[in-house]
Amino acid sequence: MAKDGKLNAQMERFCQEYIKNPDNQTAAAAAAGYKNASVSASRHMDNPKVQARIAELMEHRNKRVKIDADYVLKQSVKIHERCMQEIEPFTDAKGNHIHDDKGRPLYVFDAKAAIAALGLVGKHVNVQAFKERMEVNVNVTLADRLAKARRRALEKNTK
Image 1 (tube, one colour):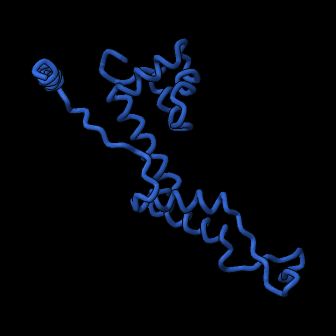
Image 2 (image 1 turned 90 degrees about the horizontal axis):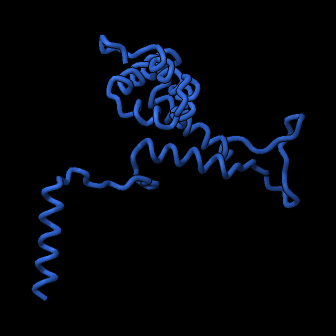
Image 3 (image 1 turned 120 degrees about the horizontal axis):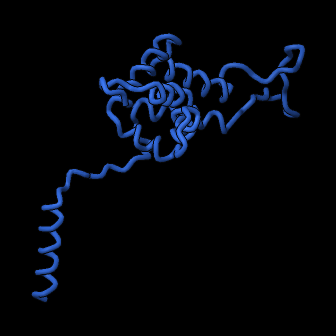
């Protein structure tokens, strides 16, 4: 970090690379020129100034491309409906409806994409149908842990 408290050029490059692929912070550090990319990436992700810069860059990008939560939700619903083909039947190259041997119209169904879109919608609207996180209390102090251990030791010795 620069002496004035601002990010240096390499840290700025890390931030720029990170927003291109937020799923791979090690690749961002490598692209920024760090020799030990995984260690540097981890250290930078713990840095509040780096976190603030990444948030600033992402917000700027989202405004520029006009993507927000409403856009993601609308597009996810649209993709799900299209994958389910609830509106249009399957057609041939000339636009004629294709029917099965019993005369019923055929519909295209892309189950994988439909499930993925529905999962994204479910996560977005917080229906918790696909809850993937576990809530853990990390606000336990060392004193709390020692007190609990002492109680266990006393209980074990009194039995």
